[in-house]
Length: 366
Image 1 (tube, helix red, strand yellow):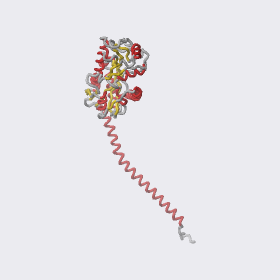
Image 2: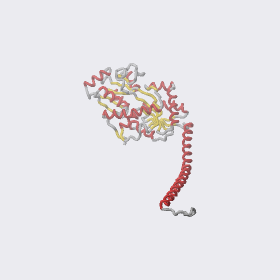
Image 3: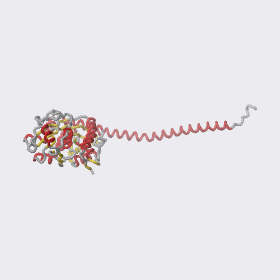
Image 4: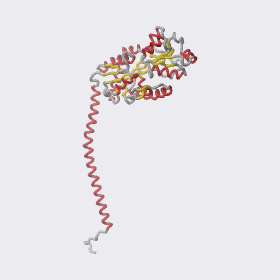
C-alpha cells in the first residue's frame, strides 16, 4: 500500500481518539471553572476582608476612647444592703480611675437573679456592669428556668473582695459559750434548735448547711426574705443561731446581745479578734467565705475588660477605699479575669452537687 494513502481507522482507534478529545475537554472545563471560582472568591473576599478590618478597627477605636460617657453599675439587691453599700464605694473610686461617673442602679429580686439577668442581656460595650457575690455560682442549682449562665453570659472582670462569715448565737436563748457546746447541745436535742437566714440559697443558708453536714447536726432552717428580718428575730430570741457576715454582727456582739462561736476567715477576723476561726477549731476546709465580683456582659471587648480590671485594681489600692471596706469586714482581693472565671467554673458544679446531696429545694424563676 502506498505510503500517502491513509489506512481506514478501526473501531479501537476511533475510541482512543474520542477518549483523548474527552479528556482534553474535561481539563479545559476544569481550568475555566477554576478561573471563574477564583474571580468569584476574590470578589467575595474583598468586602469580607474589609468588614473584618472595620470590625477590628472599630473595636480598637472603642477601647481607645472608652469610656466616653457614664457607666451603669447594677446592684442586684435593694438600696442599703451590704452589696449596695460596697457598690457605691467602688463606683466612686473606679469613676475617678476611669474619668467618668459610675451610677449605681438597684435591680433587686429573686435572690439577685433579676439584676444579673438585666446585666447579662445588656449591650456588651462596657457601659453596663454587674456587682455580685458567689451566689451567682449557686443560682443554677437553686432556680429552675434561670435565664442566664454564670460563666457564658458574662465577661467577668475580677474578684473585688472577700468577706468572712460568723457563726453566732443569742446567749439568752441558747447559753452556749463555744462551738463544742453548740455541737453537744444540738446532738442532745436533734431538730429542736433553729437558725435564721436571709433566704434560701443565700450565704447565710448554704454556709450553715455546709457546717451542719460536716458536723452531722440536725438544726432547723428558718428562712426570711432578707438579712434584716433574720437578724432581728435572732436578736429577739425567736431563733437561737445564725450565720452572718462579720461586720453585720459586730455591733450586737459588742453589746453582748450576740455571741460569736467561730468565724470563717483564715485567721482571727479583724473586726472581732477575740473570735476563733473554724480553721483554729480544726475545720480548715469548710470554705465559707463570701467573695464579690465585677462582671460585664459576654462578648465585651477584651480591651475594655482589661481597662476595667486596671481601674478596679487602682481603686482598691486607694487607702481611703481600703479603710472603708475594712469597716464592712471586707478584704480587697483583686485578680485577673481568668482567675475569677476559673473560680466560677469550679464553684458551679461544687454547689450543684452539694445542693443536690443536701436536698435543698429549688425555686422557679418563671
